[in-house]
Image 1 (cartoon, rainbow, N blue to C red):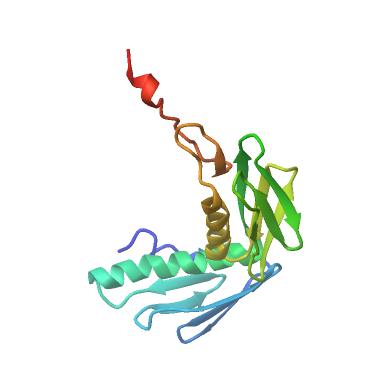
Image 2: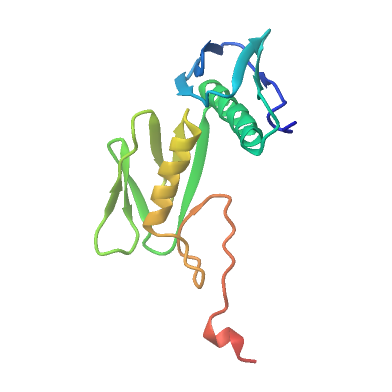
Length: 180
């Protein structure tokens, strides 16, 4: 059995799950998320937990089993605690500024780049070099953070660019570092 799929999803207080066939709706203090899952997966609710079962041990069902459980768990965590990604701008003249709900990036390009988040996602600028992306949908938070990072990813020779706060950039020595 799948190590991830066989674990039950515990429901914290204040979180309600409604299962209608293959559609699962999770409501909590931060909002509500809804998603439909593969027709072969069986989703049930047992006294404060959500359990996902699969019909057979085929490779496809094993993969869907763990995936379905992980997606439901992410929905429960999202509506109860939320998700957050932190980005950092490294480099002289690299700045971020709040512009309405979005963020305007000045990262040594010929123009400024504005990134607008979708509804349900908030982007906050802390100082001029830190950006925080928050929301209840894990996939949407990661997507917006990746789009911001994609504007100017870290340079492997200088380290300058937009990176995740916990990202380690290994700097290459370049041509002069190869000579001994």
